[in-house]
Image 1: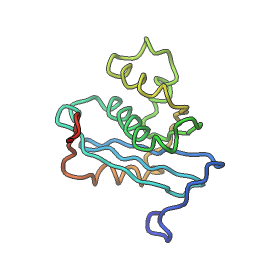
Image 2 (image 1 turned 60 degrees about the vertical axis):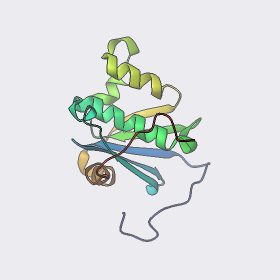
Image 3 (image 1 turned 135 degrees about the horizontal axis):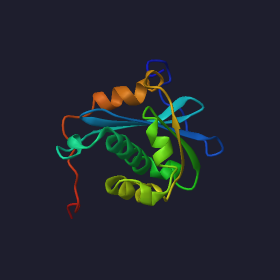
Image 4 (image 1 turned 90 degrees about the vertical axis):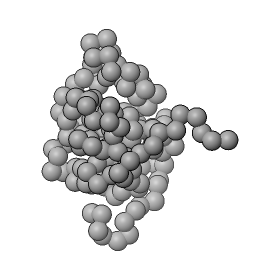
Length: 147
């Protein structure tokens, strides 16, 4: 899929979108697909504090990262999110008050998007998995940009 030419497809606003995400122990990966063809790739390293998150929190963080990274494509459009973490589809589609506090904060961030989380086995998420494992060594988060 990644090795075939052309590697990236063109965005078509009339076609449905799929956001494929994955989290490893040290990084996050996200791929935006349309017609099973990748439109854009993204990955980043986890901070030292984020590396100590539970796996379900890392996977939710991957969804937040992918949604924010591809905001200009998915905002206002129904988007299917593919994850290899099955409990996410139940927790993210359930009531907000029943989720743990850290997940509640991430769920509030995701409320601006029209996302439907679907489970897909990890073998089928090879691109997002590869991106989460081969991230940049360090990702600096700038809270206040330089003027």
